[in-house]
Length: 374
Image 1 (tube, rainbow, N blue to C red):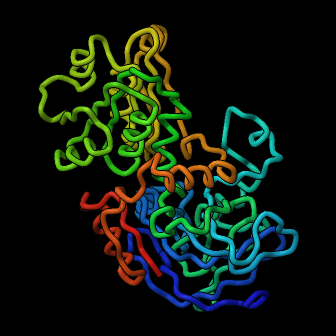
Image 2: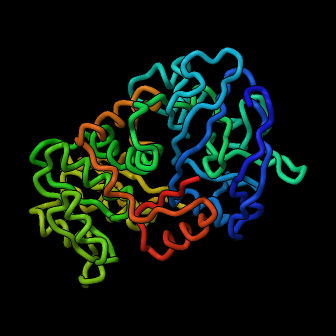
């Protein structure tokens, strides 16, 4: 089908707040520096639900959501040299062009080469490759993995080990990489340190795993859902607490538990009040708190400046700080050699026509990750 339009199934979000609709869509062939991918498996992440809810300031409709996917290159456009038809790949919502000042700076992974068009749901040339019922459908996060075939920029693709199980490593496209990297790249958790992880969903569990790999001696999980505690301990949490069990603010509880506060804390929810608690739970003089969760548009964070004056650091992370094209293949290798967990994040497997059920499981707090297969 190289050079031709492909008709296939996709889950289209026609408008905010409505379930996805399984439709037949037309996927145009890739233009110069673009890659068309046959998606084999995709997971459903909170960010997809956030955009679908209508709360995302960049959310536009109609759109094909999805950004945790894995598949096989079907064809490539002119000038593509890094991948070819038949390669096993993970599409990337943060690209790596290797040329912009962000890519050339070792301190960040936030490639800006196609940011302007990606934020508008378009390919780098300002157009879409998706059509449904005669209407152009927008792309999402540069990936749109809720489609049997998708088209992405060639800088938004990581070539991975062909032996990797795609219904597992698709998770490395967002959640696991984000949480794991927040601990090992952004916070740079040190051996023997004490950590607190606020929010024990998929990203929070990946942070717990990262703290454990980094050698933290004490990892405290914090969540209002006690059903998440057993799994958090499997990932490496030494103990878990529920803020609702205490009459005082959770930061005070943690300061008492840890003789002055934790060395590192992570907010994995997107709640600005919890972000404050996470910072204030850090130890005076050296505590580092990392904001991993994405707050709703218009939200602002607050704390007393004295918290920072007395030596605490507030940081943020996107995609765990990984430079995507070069790092994802390494993370796949770490999974294949059992250094990091991936299988354990998958709680449900569904067929593609059940994709709305995946959102229901997510909202009910019953799933960590649901993988949907075509």
